[in-house]
Image 1 (tube, rainbow, N blue to C red):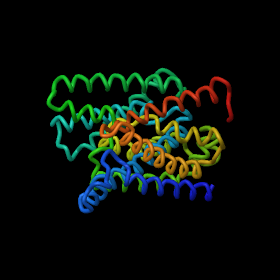
Image 2 (tube, helix red, strand yellow; image 1 turned 45 degrees about the vertical axis):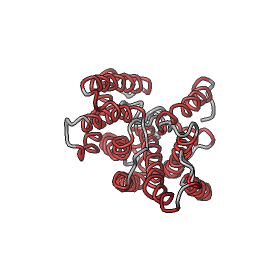
Image 3 (cartoon, one colour; image 1 turned 135 degrees about the vertical axis):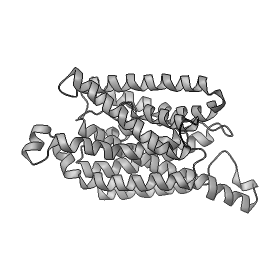
Image 4 (tube, one colour; image 1 turned 45 degrees about the horizontal axis):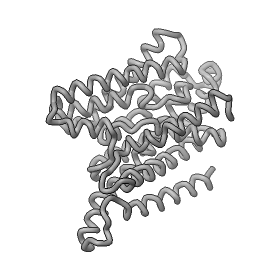
Length: 318
């Protein structure tokens, strides 16, 4: 795994370096100072943010899927991403100060998660995968409906709100990059340290309890820690969905792994995935830039269907 992780890290670094010189503007025809300004102040923070967002979404997906024992659990299918976008939209429209945008997203996302879990628990004593996903998707649809109402109420903010609905890394700067990066590193360190407990949770609550892990106590703590980085990222980028499902499940399709190696590889592949997707979105129909969230949806849905076919419809590899 260590060699695999090093190779992916090197490829990610190379892809990030190459992306600095790829975009809707051809740097070769510009004066050197103007080209350097575009690289340092526009492309570099965007690429750094792509790395952080991809890693945050993928690593949180790994934790959600183990803690909830649901291979389709991530911030989008649990309704958290839509709630976070709604919280950010509220700050954009002036309902609350803009500096509270990340906090609004965290609170809205965690409330959505609590609501989904409570509703699923109310319907059944166990969190059946299909019940969680159905409730999460329905809650996300309701949040989207509220977002459309906000667009109608505040038409002058339509452009900003639509950006959140589509999910975009454009306009990234070093402030959000630093904040999201620090939170992702802290969350990642805590979750990596809890790797042993997560491996035991993967065996089931009863087995974990017999081996010294109290699932009822540790589960909500792990969910909160795993939720913060993607919710903060979404507060700046808008809706970027399915990364937390596609990346870890594609890795597991080829090879079963314990939590820690899966966590590290998912973070690296998530970062690489978003770098590539964002670069394609910036250049495919330049000078028009396709939002990152749209590009992720276009590329992730076929992969999602592939995983459903291989792992669910036909049994696939376990």
